Length: 483
Image (cartoon, rainbow, N blue to C red; front, side):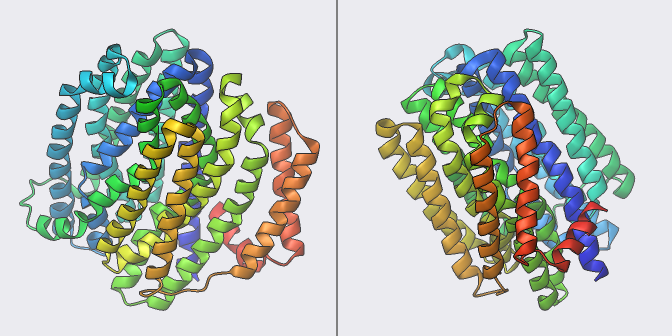
Protein backbone atom coordinates (compact mmCIF):
# COMPACT_ATOMS: atom_id res chain seq x y z
CA UNK A 1 0.00 0.00 0.00
CA UNK A 2 2.98 2.32 0.49
CA UNK A 3 3.42 2.57 -3.32
CA UNK A 4 -0.25 3.54 -3.77
CA UNK A 5 0.04 6.07 -0.95
CA UNK A 6 3.14 7.65 -2.53
CA UNK A 7 1.39 7.75 -5.92
CA UNK A 8 -1.68 9.39 -4.35
CA UNK A 9 0.49 11.95 -2.57
CA UNK A 10 2.31 12.80 -5.79
CA UNK A 11 -0.99 13.10 -7.66
CA UNK A 12 -2.19 15.42 -4.89
CA UNK A 13 0.96 17.53 -5.14
CA UNK A 14 0.73 17.72 -8.92
CA UNK A 15 -3.03 18.32 -8.65
CA UNK A 16 -2.51 21.39 -6.49
CA UNK A 17 0.26 22.55 -8.82
CA UNK A 18 -1.94 22.00 -11.88
CA UNK A 19 -4.77 23.91 -10.25
CA UNK A 20 -2.46 26.87 -9.70
CA UNK A 21 -1.02 26.61 -13.22
CA UNK A 22 -4.42 26.39 -14.90
CA UNK A 23 -5.71 29.30 -12.85
CA UNK A 24 -3.12 31.34 -14.76
CA UNK A 25 -5.36 31.50 -17.81
CA UNK A 26 -8.46 32.19 -15.75
CA UNK A 27 -6.73 34.96 -13.78
CA UNK A 28 -5.36 36.59 -16.91
CA UNK A 29 -8.67 36.27 -18.78
CA UNK A 30 -10.52 39.08 -16.95
CA UNK A 31 -7.40 41.27 -17.01
CA UNK A 32 -7.06 40.90 -20.78
CA UNK A 33 -10.76 40.87 -21.72
CA UNK A 34 -11.86 43.74 -19.50
CA UNK A 35 -8.80 45.88 -20.30
CA UNK A 36 -8.20 45.12 -23.98
CA UNK A 37 -11.54 43.71 -25.23
CA UNK A 38 -12.59 40.66 -27.24
CA UNK A 39 -10.58 41.56 -30.34
CA UNK A 40 -7.23 41.77 -28.53
CA UNK A 41 -8.06 38.69 -26.48
CA UNK A 42 -8.63 36.84 -29.75
CA UNK A 43 -5.14 37.81 -30.93
CA UNK A 44 -3.67 36.66 -27.60
CA UNK A 45 -5.52 33.34 -27.88
CA UNK A 46 -4.19 32.71 -31.40
CA UNK A 47 -0.63 33.40 -30.24
CA UNK A 48 -1.00 31.07 -27.27
CA UNK A 49 -2.39 28.16 -29.28
CA UNK A 50 0.38 28.63 -31.85
CA UNK A 51 2.97 28.34 -29.09
CA UNK A 52 1.12 25.36 -27.63
CA UNK A 53 1.34 23.63 -31.03
CA UNK A 54 4.92 24.28 -32.10
CA UNK A 55 6.64 23.86 -28.72
CA UNK A 56 5.55 20.21 -28.26
CA UNK A 57 6.21 19.50 -31.96
CA UNK A 58 9.81 20.62 -31.49
CA UNK A 59 10.32 17.78 -29.00
CA UNK A 60 9.66 15.11 -31.70
CA UNK A 61 8.14 12.82 -29.08
CA UNK A 62 11.63 12.46 -27.54
CA UNK A 63 10.59 13.47 -24.03
CA UNK A 64 7.89 10.80 -23.97
CA UNK A 65 10.52 8.29 -25.10
CA UNK A 66 12.88 9.56 -22.41
CA UNK A 67 10.28 8.88 -19.72
CA UNK A 68 9.46 5.49 -21.21
CA UNK A 69 13.08 4.30 -21.32
CA UNK A 70 14.74 6.16 -18.43
CA UNK A 71 12.06 6.00 -15.71
CA UNK A 72 13.62 2.85 -14.22
CA UNK A 73 17.25 3.69 -15.16
CA UNK A 74 19.85 3.93 -12.37
CA UNK A 75 23.07 4.38 -14.35
CA UNK A 76 24.05 8.07 -14.21
CA UNK A 77 26.02 7.89 -17.46
CA UNK A 78 23.03 6.51 -19.37
CA UNK A 79 20.78 9.15 -17.82
CA UNK A 80 23.19 11.90 -18.92
CA UNK A 81 23.43 10.48 -22.43
CA UNK A 82 19.66 10.12 -22.79
CA UNK A 83 18.71 13.49 -21.34
CA UNK A 84 21.33 15.65 -23.07
CA UNK A 85 20.73 13.92 -26.40
CA UNK A 86 17.10 14.93 -26.10
CA UNK A 87 17.89 18.50 -25.02
CA UNK A 88 20.30 19.14 -27.91
CA UNK A 89 17.89 17.76 -30.51
CA UNK A 90 14.99 19.79 -29.06
CA UNK A 91 17.14 22.94 -29.11
CA UNK A 92 18.00 22.63 -32.82
CA UNK A 93 14.48 21.68 -33.92
CA UNK A 94 12.84 24.44 -31.87
CA UNK A 95 15.33 26.96 -33.25
CA UNK A 96 14.33 26.01 -36.81
CA UNK A 97 10.61 26.30 -36.01
CA UNK A 98 11.11 29.65 -34.28
CA UNK A 99 13.00 31.03 -37.28
CA UNK A 100 10.25 29.82 -39.62
CA UNK A 101 7.57 31.60 -37.58
CA UNK A 102 9.73 34.74 -37.40
CA UNK A 103 10.15 34.84 -41.19
CA UNK A 104 6.48 34.09 -41.93
CA UNK A 105 5.09 36.56 -39.38
CA UNK A 106 3.68 39.02 -41.94
CA UNK A 107 1.79 36.37 -43.89
CA UNK A 108 0.44 34.81 -40.69
CA UNK A 109 -0.75 38.19 -39.40
CA UNK A 110 -2.65 38.97 -42.59
CA UNK A 111 -4.18 35.51 -43.16
CA UNK A 112 -5.35 34.69 -39.63
CA UNK A 113 -5.39 37.90 -37.60
CA UNK A 114 -6.41 40.23 -40.45
CA UNK A 115 -3.91 42.79 -39.08
CA UNK A 116 -0.38 43.20 -40.45
CA UNK A 117 0.64 45.19 -37.36
CA UNK A 118 0.34 41.97 -35.33
CA UNK A 119 3.45 40.65 -37.11
CA UNK A 120 5.65 42.18 -34.40
CA UNK A 121 3.80 40.21 -31.73
CA UNK A 122 4.25 37.02 -33.76
CA UNK A 123 8.00 37.59 -34.06
CA UNK A 124 8.30 37.98 -30.30
CA UNK A 125 6.16 34.89 -29.78
CA UNK A 126 8.56 32.94 -32.02
CA UNK A 127 11.20 33.27 -29.27
CA UNK A 128 8.71 31.88 -26.75
CA UNK A 129 8.33 28.75 -28.91
CA UNK A 130 11.98 27.81 -28.45
CA UNK A 131 12.10 28.73 -24.76
CA UNK A 132 8.93 26.79 -23.99
CA UNK A 133 10.16 23.70 -25.85
CA UNK A 134 13.35 23.69 -23.78
CA UNK A 135 11.33 24.34 -20.62
CA UNK A 136 9.06 21.38 -21.33
CA UNK A 137 11.99 19.08 -22.08
CA UNK A 138 13.73 20.09 -18.84
CA UNK A 139 10.58 19.64 -16.79
CA UNK A 140 10.14 16.13 -18.19
CA UNK A 141 13.46 15.19 -16.56
CA UNK A 142 11.95 15.78 -13.11
CA UNK A 143 8.77 13.97 -14.10
CA UNK A 144 10.67 10.94 -15.39
CA UNK A 145 12.53 10.41 -12.11
CA UNK A 146 9.75 11.29 -9.70
CA UNK A 147 11.20 14.66 -8.61
CA UNK A 148 7.70 16.03 -8.29
CA UNK A 149 8.51 18.72 -5.71
CA UNK A 150 11.00 20.33 -8.07
CA UNK A 151 8.66 19.80 -11.02
CA UNK A 152 5.81 21.43 -9.14
CA UNK A 153 8.00 24.25 -7.85
CA UNK A 154 9.18 25.17 -11.34
CA UNK A 155 5.64 25.08 -12.72
CA UNK A 156 4.42 27.36 -9.93
CA UNK A 157 7.39 29.70 -10.45
CA UNK A 158 6.54 30.02 -14.14
CA UNK A 159 2.87 30.62 -13.34
CA UNK A 160 3.47 33.39 -10.83
CA UNK A 161 6.10 35.00 -13.04
CA UNK A 162 3.80 34.97 -16.06
CA UNK A 163 0.78 36.28 -14.17
CA UNK A 164 2.83 38.99 -12.49
CA UNK A 165 4.63 40.24 -15.59
CA UNK A 166 1.59 40.05 -17.92
CA UNK A 167 -0.74 41.74 -15.43
CA UNK A 168 1.80 44.50 -14.76
CA UNK A 169 2.35 45.08 -18.48
CA UNK A 170 -1.33 45.19 -19.43
CA UNK A 171 -2.53 47.24 -16.46
CA UNK A 172 0.25 49.78 -17.02
CA UNK A 173 -0.69 50.37 -20.64
CA UNK A 174 1.87 48.22 -22.47
CA UNK A 175 -0.91 46.17 -24.09
CA UNK A 176 -0.33 42.92 -25.93
CA UNK A 177 3.27 43.86 -26.71
CA UNK A 178 4.13 43.91 -23.02
CA UNK A 179 2.14 40.73 -22.42
CA UNK A 180 4.08 38.75 -25.04
CA UNK A 181 7.42 40.12 -23.76
CA UNK A 182 6.34 38.86 -20.34
CA UNK A 183 6.07 35.34 -21.75
CA UNK A 184 9.69 35.51 -22.89
CA UNK A 185 10.85 36.65 -19.45
CA UNK A 186 8.88 34.06 -17.47
CA UNK A 187 9.98 31.16 -19.71
CA UNK A 188 13.61 32.29 -19.53
CA UNK A 189 13.56 32.41 -15.73
CA UNK A 190 12.19 28.87 -15.41
CA UNK A 191 14.67 27.52 -17.97
CA UNK A 192 17.63 28.92 -16.03
CA UNK A 193 16.42 27.64 -12.65
CA UNK A 194 15.58 24.20 -14.05
CA UNK A 195 18.99 23.95 -15.73
CA UNK A 196 20.69 24.70 -12.40
CA UNK A 197 18.79 21.87 -10.68
CA UNK A 198 19.60 19.38 -13.44
CA UNK A 199 23.30 20.30 -13.55
CA UNK A 200 23.50 19.91 -9.79
CA UNK A 201 21.90 16.45 -9.97
CA UNK A 202 23.55 14.78 -12.96
CA UNK A 203 26.26 17.20 -14.09
CA UNK A 204 26.94 17.85 -17.77
CA UNK A 205 28.43 15.93 -20.65
CA UNK A 206 28.24 16.36 -24.40
CA UNK A 207 25.99 13.63 -25.77
CA UNK A 208 27.06 11.15 -28.41
CA UNK A 209 23.45 10.54 -29.47
CA UNK A 210 23.81 6.76 -29.13
CA UNK A 211 20.22 6.12 -28.10
CA UNK A 212 18.51 8.77 -30.21
CA UNK A 213 17.57 6.25 -32.90
CA UNK A 214 15.56 4.16 -30.43
CA UNK A 215 14.03 7.31 -28.95
CA UNK A 216 12.98 8.56 -32.37
CA UNK A 217 11.49 5.22 -33.39
CA UNK A 218 9.35 5.35 -30.28
CA UNK A 219 8.59 9.07 -30.25
CA UNK A 220 8.20 10.09 -33.90
CA UNK A 221 4.83 8.33 -34.34
CA UNK A 222 3.61 10.57 -31.53
CA UNK A 223 4.56 13.76 -33.42
CA UNK A 224 1.74 13.53 -35.99
CA UNK A 225 -0.51 12.53 -33.12
CA UNK A 226 0.51 15.71 -31.31
CA UNK A 227 -0.21 17.78 -34.40
CA UNK A 228 -3.51 16.06 -35.05
CA UNK A 229 -4.47 16.33 -31.39
CA UNK A 230 -3.84 20.05 -31.64
CA UNK A 231 -6.05 20.17 -34.74
CA UNK A 232 -8.83 18.54 -32.72
CA UNK A 233 -8.38 20.87 -29.72
CA UNK A 234 -7.38 24.21 -31.19
CA UNK A 235 -7.59 24.46 -34.98
CA UNK A 236 -11.17 25.68 -34.65
CA UNK A 237 -9.81 28.98 -33.33
CA UNK A 238 -7.65 29.40 -36.42
CA UNK A 239 -10.62 28.67 -38.65
CA UNK A 240 -12.83 31.08 -36.69
CA UNK A 241 -10.18 33.75 -37.26
CA UNK A 242 -9.95 32.87 -40.96
CA UNK A 243 -13.69 32.67 -41.68
CA UNK A 244 -14.95 35.22 -39.13
CA UNK A 245 -12.75 37.62 -37.12
CA UNK A 246 -10.54 37.91 -34.03
CA UNK A 247 -13.48 39.13 -31.91
CA UNK A 248 -15.27 35.81 -32.46
CA UNK A 249 -12.01 34.04 -31.63
CA UNK A 250 -11.90 35.95 -28.35
CA UNK A 251 -15.48 35.05 -27.39
CA UNK A 252 -15.01 31.40 -28.32
CA UNK A 253 -11.66 31.17 -26.54
CA UNK A 254 -13.02 32.66 -23.31
CA UNK A 255 -15.96 30.24 -23.27
CA UNK A 256 -13.70 27.33 -24.22
CA UNK A 257 -11.26 28.10 -21.39
CA UNK A 258 -14.07 28.08 -18.84
CA UNK A 259 -15.57 24.85 -20.18
CA UNK A 260 -12.12 23.23 -20.24
CA UNK A 261 -11.70 23.70 -16.47
CA UNK A 262 -12.42 19.96 -16.29
CA UNK A 263 -8.91 19.44 -17.65
CA UNK A 264 -7.69 20.49 -14.17
CA UNK A 265 -8.67 17.07 -12.85
CA UNK A 266 -7.01 15.06 -15.61
CA UNK A 267 -3.74 17.00 -15.68
CA UNK A 268 -2.20 15.37 -12.56
CA UNK A 269 -2.85 11.96 -14.07
CA UNK A 270 -1.43 13.01 -17.44
CA UNK A 271 1.77 13.93 -15.63
CA UNK A 272 2.03 11.14 -13.03
CA UNK A 273 0.36 8.05 -14.49
CA UNK A 274 2.56 7.42 -17.54
CA UNK A 275 5.96 7.18 -15.79
CA UNK A 276 4.35 5.14 -12.99
CA UNK A 277 2.71 2.50 -15.18
CA UNK A 278 5.74 2.45 -17.50
CA UNK A 279 7.84 1.34 -14.55
CA UNK A 280 5.21 -1.23 -13.53
CA UNK A 281 5.05 -2.58 -17.08
CA UNK A 282 8.83 -2.97 -17.31
CA UNK A 283 8.88 -4.76 -13.96
CA UNK A 284 6.08 -7.12 -15.01
CA UNK A 285 3.65 -5.90 -12.34
CA UNK A 286 0.54 -5.98 -14.52
CA UNK A 287 -1.98 -6.42 -11.68
CA UNK A 288 -0.44 -3.51 -9.77
CA UNK A 289 -0.64 -1.42 -12.93
CA UNK A 290 -4.34 -2.25 -13.31
CA UNK A 291 -4.92 -1.06 -9.75
CA UNK A 292 -3.27 2.27 -10.55
CA UNK A 293 -5.45 2.64 -13.64
CA UNK A 294 -8.64 1.81 -11.73
CA UNK A 295 -7.84 4.30 -8.96
CA UNK A 296 -6.98 6.96 -11.53
CA UNK A 297 -10.26 6.50 -13.39
CA UNK A 298 -12.32 6.81 -10.20
CA UNK A 299 -10.34 9.87 -9.10
CA UNK A 300 -10.93 11.67 -12.40
CA UNK A 301 -14.65 10.90 -12.56
CA UNK A 302 -15.13 11.78 -8.89
CA UNK A 303 -14.36 15.42 -9.70
CA UNK A 304 -15.01 15.72 -13.43
CA UNK A 305 -18.68 14.69 -13.38
CA UNK A 306 -19.83 17.31 -10.84
CA UNK A 307 -17.61 19.89 -12.55
CA UNK A 308 -19.47 19.25 -15.81
CA UNK A 309 -22.85 19.91 -14.17
CA UNK A 310 -21.60 22.92 -12.24
CA UNK A 311 -20.00 24.61 -15.24
CA UNK A 312 -23.12 24.04 -17.34
CA UNK A 313 -25.43 25.61 -14.75
CA UNK A 314 -23.12 28.54 -13.95
CA UNK A 315 -21.86 29.27 -17.48
CA UNK A 316 -23.56 32.66 -17.79
CA UNK A 317 -22.53 33.82 -14.32
CA UNK A 318 -18.91 32.75 -14.81
CA UNK A 319 -18.67 34.57 -18.13
CA UNK A 320 -20.08 37.76 -16.59
CA UNK A 321 -17.56 37.57 -13.74
CA UNK A 322 -14.53 36.82 -15.89
CA UNK A 323 -15.26 38.77 -19.06
CA UNK A 324 -17.54 41.55 -20.30
CA UNK A 325 -21.20 41.35 -21.50
CA UNK A 326 -20.19 40.95 -25.17
CA UNK A 327 -18.90 37.45 -24.34
CA UNK A 328 -22.05 36.11 -22.64
CA UNK A 329 -24.78 35.51 -25.24
CA UNK A 330 -22.96 32.94 -27.36
CA UNK A 331 -20.39 31.98 -24.74
CA UNK A 332 -23.01 30.63 -22.33
CA UNK A 333 -24.10 28.09 -24.97
CA UNK A 334 -20.54 27.03 -25.76
CA UNK A 335 -19.39 26.35 -22.18
CA UNK A 336 -21.55 23.20 -21.52
CA UNK A 337 -20.69 21.70 -24.91
CA UNK A 338 -16.97 22.23 -24.35
CA UNK A 339 -17.19 20.93 -20.78
CA UNK A 340 -18.76 17.63 -21.89
CA UNK A 341 -16.25 17.22 -24.71
CA UNK A 342 -13.37 17.99 -22.35
CA UNK A 343 -14.55 15.27 -19.96
CA UNK A 344 -14.21 12.71 -22.77
CA UNK A 345 -10.86 14.14 -23.81
CA UNK A 346 -9.67 13.96 -20.20
CA UNK A 347 -10.46 10.25 -20.12
CA UNK A 348 -8.51 9.80 -23.33
CA UNK A 349 -5.44 11.85 -22.47
CA UNK A 350 -5.01 10.97 -18.81
CA UNK A 351 -5.71 7.23 -18.83
CA UNK A 352 -6.56 5.27 -21.97
CA UNK A 353 -4.02 6.79 -24.39
CA UNK A 354 -1.24 5.91 -21.91
CA UNK A 355 -2.27 2.25 -22.04
CA UNK A 356 -1.58 2.13 -25.77
CA UNK A 357 1.65 4.09 -25.30
CA UNK A 358 2.97 1.78 -22.59
CA UNK A 359 2.08 -1.22 -24.75
CA UNK A 360 4.16 0.42 -27.54
CA UNK A 361 1.12 0.83 -29.78
CA UNK A 362 1.85 4.47 -30.60
CA UNK A 363 0.81 3.88 -34.21
CA UNK A 364 -2.72 3.21 -33.00
CA UNK A 365 -2.64 6.51 -31.13
CA UNK A 366 -1.65 8.19 -34.38
CA UNK A 367 -4.45 6.49 -36.34
CA UNK A 368 -7.17 7.35 -33.82
CA UNK A 369 -6.08 10.96 -33.46
CA UNK A 370 -5.88 11.20 -37.27
CA UNK A 371 -9.48 10.06 -37.62
CA UNK A 372 -10.68 12.43 -34.91
CA UNK A 373 -8.75 15.41 -36.25
CA UNK A 374 -9.80 14.84 -39.86
CA UNK A 375 -13.47 14.66 -38.93
CA UNK A 376 -13.16 17.77 -36.77
CA UNK A 377 -11.35 19.74 -39.47
CA UNK A 378 -13.80 18.81 -42.22
CA UNK A 379 -16.85 19.59 -40.07
CA UNK A 380 -15.34 22.92 -38.99
CA UNK A 381 -14.66 23.98 -42.57
CA UNK A 382 -18.23 23.09 -43.55
CA UNK A 383 -20.16 24.49 -40.60
CA UNK A 384 -18.19 27.42 -39.08
CA UNK A 385 -18.87 29.75 -42.05
CA UNK A 386 -22.61 28.96 -41.73
CA UNK A 387 -23.28 28.51 -38.01
CA UNK A 388 -20.33 30.31 -36.44
CA UNK A 389 -18.61 29.53 -33.16
CA UNK A 390 -21.35 27.26 -31.76
CA UNK A 391 -20.67 24.89 -34.66
CA UNK A 392 -16.99 24.85 -33.67
CA UNK A 393 -17.89 23.69 -30.15
CA UNK A 394 -20.20 20.94 -31.40
CA UNK A 395 -17.72 19.58 -33.96
CA UNK A 396 -14.97 19.47 -31.32
CA UNK A 397 -17.30 17.53 -29.03
CA UNK A 398 -18.03 15.02 -31.81
CA UNK A 399 -14.31 14.58 -32.45
CA UNK A 400 -13.62 13.89 -28.75
CA UNK A 401 -16.38 11.28 -28.57
CA UNK A 402 -14.96 9.44 -31.58
CA UNK A 403 -11.44 9.62 -30.15
CA UNK A 404 -12.31 8.21 -26.72
CA UNK A 405 -14.56 5.49 -28.19
CA UNK A 406 -11.81 4.14 -30.46
CA UNK A 407 -9.11 4.41 -27.79
CA UNK A 408 -11.12 2.67 -25.07
CA UNK A 409 -12.16 -0.17 -27.37
CA UNK A 410 -8.64 -1.02 -28.55
CA UNK A 411 -6.79 -0.27 -25.30
CA UNK A 412 -8.80 -2.97 -23.55
CA UNK A 413 -7.27 -5.54 -25.90
CA UNK A 414 -3.91 -4.93 -24.23
CA UNK A 415 -4.70 -3.98 -20.63
CA UNK A 416 -8.19 -4.44 -19.26
CA UNK A 417 -9.28 -3.13 -15.88
CA UNK A 418 -12.61 -2.62 -14.18
CA UNK A 419 -14.79 0.39 -15.08
CA UNK A 420 -16.91 1.52 -12.08
CA UNK A 421 -20.29 1.85 -13.79
CA UNK A 422 -22.15 1.85 -10.46
CA UNK A 423 -20.00 4.67 -9.16
CA UNK A 424 -20.57 6.66 -12.37
CA UNK A 425 -24.36 6.37 -11.97
CA UNK A 426 -24.20 7.50 -8.34
CA UNK A 427 -21.92 10.41 -9.23
CA UNK A 428 -24.31 11.57 -11.98
CA UNK A 429 -27.27 11.39 -9.57
CA UNK A 430 -25.43 13.35 -6.88
CA UNK A 431 -24.39 15.91 -9.50
CA UNK A 432 -28.01 16.33 -10.62
CA UNK A 433 -29.08 17.11 -7.05
CA UNK A 434 -26.25 19.62 -6.77
CA UNK A 435 -27.13 21.24 -10.11
CA UNK A 436 -30.82 21.61 -9.20
CA UNK A 437 -29.94 23.41 -5.96
CA UNK A 438 -27.56 25.78 -7.78
CA UNK A 439 -30.15 26.42 -10.50
CA UNK A 440 -32.84 27.15 -7.91
CA UNK A 441 -30.67 29.67 -6.02
CA UNK A 442 -29.47 31.34 -9.27
CA UNK A 443 -26.45 33.10 -7.69
CA UNK A 444 -25.00 36.30 -9.11
CA UNK A 445 -21.74 38.08 -8.39
CA UNK A 446 -18.35 36.78 -7.33
CA UNK A 447 -19.23 36.20 -3.66
CA UNK A 448 -22.52 34.35 -4.16
CA UNK A 449 -21.24 32.27 -7.09
CA UNK A 450 -18.19 31.28 -5.06
CA UNK A 451 -20.38 30.46 -2.06
CA UNK A 452 -22.70 28.27 -4.15
CA UNK A 453 -19.74 26.43 -5.65
CA UNK A 454 -18.66 25.49 -2.12
CA UNK A 455 -22.23 24.61 -1.12
CA UNK A 456 -22.66 22.58 -4.31
CA UNK A 457 -19.47 20.64 -3.60
CA UNK A 458 -20.73 19.86 -0.11
CA UNK A 459 -24.09 18.71 -1.46
CA UNK A 460 -22.42 16.52 -4.08
CA UNK A 461 -20.11 14.71 -1.67
CA UNK A 462 -22.90 14.43 0.90
CA UNK A 463 -25.33 12.81 -1.54
CA UNK A 464 -22.58 10.60 -2.92
CA UNK A 465 -21.75 9.41 0.59
CA UNK A 466 -25.43 8.64 1.27
CA UNK A 467 -25.52 6.61 -1.94
CA UNK A 468 -22.41 4.77 -0.71
CA UNK A 469 -20.53 5.83 -3.80
CA UNK A 470 -17.80 7.43 -1.74
CA UNK A 471 -16.29 4.74 0.46
CA UNK A 472 -13.28 4.29 2.69
CA UNK A 473 -10.96 3.72 -0.27
CA UNK A 474 -11.77 7.10 -1.79
CA UNK A 475 -11.43 8.81 1.60
CA UNK A 476 -8.01 7.22 2.08
CA UNK A 477 -6.87 8.24 -1.41
CA UNK A 478 -7.99 11.85 -0.86
CA UNK A 479 -6.23 11.94 2.53
CA UNK A 480 -3.02 10.73 0.93
CA UNK A 481 -3.32 13.35 -1.80
CA UNK A 482 -3.66 16.10 0.79
CA UNK A 483 -0.64 15.02 2.84
